Image 1 (cartoon, rainbow, N blue to C red):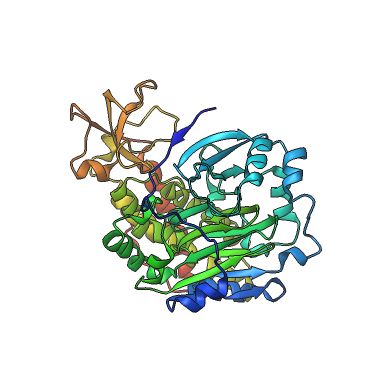
Image 2: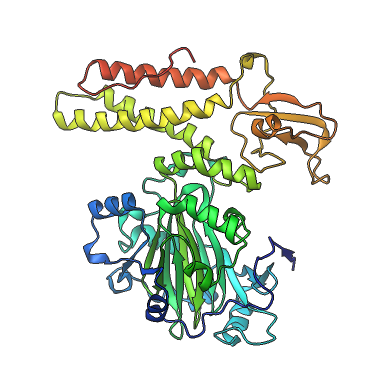
Length: 472
């Protein structure tokens, strides 16, 4: 059984986070800065309402999913997990020392159920099952059970599905915890849309969420950095009720219970504290074009500053999204008729494609140099990331075959992203060679082909065109 210590938690040694005595009403009544997040019955959810809520950027809850005919109580239970699933060992974290390890599922459940619902004086172990692999029958139920609104399913408007199989990332995870286990304050990766469904509880278990609006993302970053002495993107600050109450932005409170689906806006900071008995939650993220835009312009520069791994491969996702959107756009163009509905649909696709392409052009500004044709291409088929900041390598990078990354057992060449190199970061010998993952000409030809297709459509329609540099 292997153990490892992750990022140390930032909290006072004499202050233990505990939700003993918490109620939603007491938190709201005792703190003027706290607001109850909106609750919407699943029976009243519409596509228009979800679009409005996304634009609003305020966290909310869709409630009552457990009362729908498709809810599978027996399937979504801890007993099914223990007896019928293939999940035999699970990753767990001791919240007292932040040590990650793995345990047999049956042993983890036994030890967790024996725990007091709240932290006890002198206690040294309280286990939280984090980032568990979600069983396939649960995934199938999620997609086919007709319980979660279709607009919020993991594959709906999720650009990560366009990644090639070798680059796919899994955003669907499960969590098992008892009272006073928690996830520290954080934002979901790369400005993604977050979703969290509580699918099982014991002994009245619930979870308290402290959440912020999307529009306050910069204020949140400044508050954590300057007032709490912590970078929010390190995900290591256990934030007290008092610190949330003193924040210079509103904090939305949710008590999540069985059947509640919490919707986390892009760039919303949130901390989750489990309360009472055992709870099981499913969580997933979606990357939309708005997510890509906010990640490229706001989140990824922050990640580079605090050396946080990118994980979701934003620029690669954007590249494959443009390719997929253009394939669909071309098919629609070939089938186009004089029907106004079809014309409107193609116009919408053209604007979406143009929006993606404008972001991509800004990405290429940082990837392309004048003599790109002379740069050698990498022979590695592995997914590369910067050995300093953890950024995903989309196209251009610098490499040294004589110096190696920190894992000398693997002997990987030292790899640095262009941004880090421009800031003076290099290998030990400082003789790094510029390289590219694929010929830049291939990327530029694809890009120009998309522009030509868009311009051809705009010339024959009433849609307003978008100006691009055509000689890139």
